[in-house]
Structures are given as C-alpha cells and as structure tokens.
Image 1 (spheres, rainbow, N blue to C red):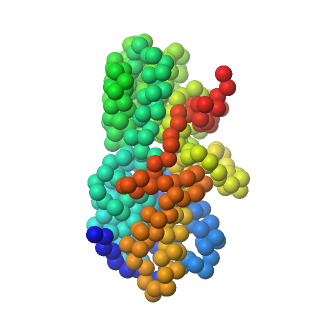
Image 2: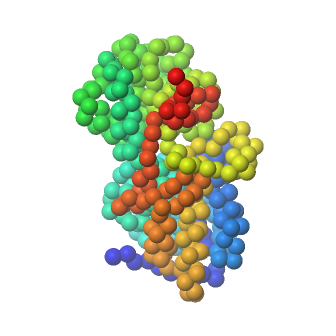
Image 3: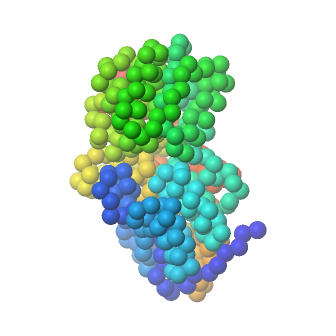
Length: 362
C-alpha cells in the first residue's frame, strides 16, 4: 500500500539532486549540466502546466556525511517532489534508504546495479540498463571467440563487485571459467603489479571493472606494455571522462553499448554539450537529462488534476504510467520493478567514441 504526503501546488517545487554541482571533474560536472538542461527544457516545453521548480544539489564533500543529511533535511524542510541520483550504485543505495522512508520518488540515471530495484521499494526507478542485462551480452561476446585464458582485474568497490558477480555467473553458465582474478586497490604501484601479474598469464581476454581512476590507470598500464590481449570493461569506460582521459588508448576496448535503439539527442543538445565539455554526451548524461524531464512531466500531470496540492503517490503513479517514455536516450520502458528493460548490445571504442560493434566494418 503506497502512502505519501502532499506538497503545495502553488509553491515552488524542489527537485533534489543527489550529487554535487560545483566540481572540477568531467564525470560529475557533465551530469549536473544535463540535470540543469533538463529542467530548463522542461520548463520551456511545459510552460503554464508546470509550477515553479528548483533543482537542489545535495553533495558537497561526501555522500555519506553531508549528502545524506542534506537530503533528509531537504525532504522535511522544502516542498520536495522527487530526487534524481546518485552518481553510482553506492550513492544510489544511500539515497534509496532515505527516500523509501519519506515515500518520495527516486530516479536513478547512472547505477547499473540491479539490486537498487530488488528490495521491494516501489519508489525507485532505474533508468540505466542493469548489469543483469549487460552481463549476458558481454559473456556471449567473450565465449564466441573461444578463449583459452581469461584474467580479471577488479576494484574492491560496490559497482565493480556486482558487475563481476553478474558476468561471472554468465561465464560459468557457458562453462567458461576464469584463470586469474586480482582485486586492485587504488594505488599506482598496486595497479602496475596487478597488470604485470595478469598479463603474465598470457590471457586472451582481460576483464577490467574498477572505479574510474583505477580503470584509467589499468588501461594505460596495459597499453604501455603493448600486450596482445582483448580488453573488456564495464559501462564506466564509456563515460565522458574515461574516454577523454584515455584518448587513443581506449581504442578497441569492448564494453556495453547502453544507448537505447533510436537514441536521438538533438543537434542543439550535442553542440551545447560539446561546446561546454569538448566531448560527445554519454549514456549517463542522456539519462540524467531524461530523468529530470520525466519527473517534471509527472509533476505537471499531477497538477493538471486541479488540486491545490500534489501527492507524492500521484507523482509516483504518473512516473509508472509514462512508460514507455521516448527521451533523448531512446525508449525507456519499466519492467515489473520499475527498472529500464531496454536492449543492450556489445560496443567497441573507436576514435574516442563508443559505437555498436555491429557497425564496425570488417
């Protein structure tokens, strides 16, 4: 039984953003830009149907300290209709624990960890395709090459562990066991030693899943050693910061292509993003933009009921009913636990961009 509190339709509506705003790194800056752009465009398109809205970033230093307390305070102090975030699986889980108690919709545009939607909490909407959709297509891609040896370099963070759990399950299903697995701490010397040991096994495939800084360091070390090995990574390798940092060193890496069929960001959107950051927008950027727009559409539809207040349950129901939603990411369609069930295909990085591997000419 869903229950929710009402927010005043005549007042400014606040959208919580479980992430930082004033940051220097490209990964998080690009998401904040997309969220702001989504709010601006929704206000333009919905005009009089939408009450005044404000996007409030909640993380300054740490999601576990100031972010969590800021979200809790915002919910009980302001006219909050929903939350966008977090920046990865761990921060999304943290936000989930708070919004579930407050009965507030949370739209997660970045996390691929399927467990965000498996706790039976109806308030959570996962826009990024989950690892349970990603892993089978990557495992099939590996198995098709009939590998003799597979090595794995794995971060000790939440997202890396859950990605590997799903991928390993699929590899075992194909009777394709892994020959070596090394957990890599975030230290330069540890990265060098882990890469050396892995390549010493002469693997056909090297699977890498790690936080962004470790992931980039691992790829650079592999390229410096000029190893003849096929590299497969999780979706984080296709984020704007990783592609920009690695440049040509990322070419040839296999990873999930998360753009839905028919993704169509406008030329204006692409040009504005490229002018700001010097790169193409990635899946997380497009999904963050769509998440804000979906939430604002749900709010506008709730206001159209003609009530003086907006019930959060009504906003939730409107979000459910928006599926399938046609955004700049492509079609977003909820499964039974409100997770996007769009099709995933293998991708390959070429000239600083990720493209569906099927588009690569022989």
